[in-house]
Length: 584
Image (cartoon, rainbow, N blue to C red; front, top):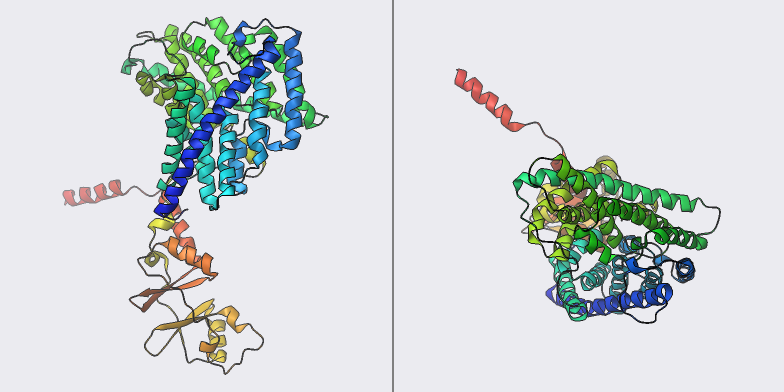
């Protein structure tokens, strides 16, 4: 739950978000150039930042040396900053949930460097996870330097993370949605305004630094009409099953690494030998692979080639990421999803009647559906693929396939690739974004009424007797005109020096906080927390009409649960009444 943020605070957050948008763009440029520099030096033996495709690599012993050396560097960096292990988004979620959105400053340095080293030495990762953590670290660091609340720091963390993603991919809308689905756990104006500003500025930085236009090119195709939607429905179901394989396979590999009789420091080196061995046979499975994704989306990959790419990338990614090195998940899953879609699409075109659909269209839809299901960020995935391709005609089949894939995945897998690690730490992540019931429930709906009171002239002995007979935790004190002049809690009578004949008005708290019957329950809740009280009188124009307790506040959740409970159908019952009347 959250309270309304004053306009001045929102303005401050928005200004800071603009700064993070620029910082996210700079971080993205630095990370991608570091990856190119290290790749050229470590894998190709050249010293420049000209992007080179690993598809052109002539693999040899140098590949194994580079991969293992990179793994040891990442392990050394992980001893300095342990949070760099993995793809990073779970660590950002953990910081938000358990550490008041505080990320150590060293993470802002160690994560991009470790990711650049890992990817630059041919690890089969993408740059999106590391840049999200880097941007999030910058936002968290800014929130630790400037005096803000933990909730505001969370917004800055999300702004930095989304800015990094927007600057890397030129996908500001998807960055906003991903931040809402995976990081913010909040859908409010105070969060959305800074978030949109940060991603907009970072999107402008992307165009300035990397050029305009979509990241991937989809070949021309006809609009996916109603008659071909069944094929995409089947594709979505298949992608849901494939996402289960992707995630559970990774969880199994991570479990196998944890059972090894050697320390975690050595795990990345084992993973490096594994993915280098696969890359020796299938060089396209290494590195970020954006050019390989474009190759598959263009429909140029034969079925055998797509199948080889799929298996090689999947196993190499399992071995690398499961080892605890530093890298991202998005680009690998996009490539695996596209390859899977290419294979399934070929089969669907052969098996189903009706017009054939372009293989590239199947591949594009599948990469979005697979990532959306595996990450449980379906809406973000739909928007992301649309922004990466700028192809509006793909939206309808993409939406259908992605939501069906999500349905299948949730039926078969308890945890997503983003939440499994958090679950092992005892954290549970929900997916519900709705109206806070405490803000929509009025005090009059939950207050206890009528109220039992004590006269301000009553003695301590009389009050003690009332507490023993009534079982209440507190009584409002009223004067001769029924005005509340104080409140007497049970603890006020437990003091050893209480005189039985002393008026309770001298024992009670005279500074009474109150609420009105039309106030929201959230106001009563915050008064209880801020004032350290458990009972709040409810006054209507000065007249006592009820009292609100902590137990009463529990009714808010009861109302919410009632709304989720199944009820007997009302319409059939009413129809039965009308039928009886008509028979008469």
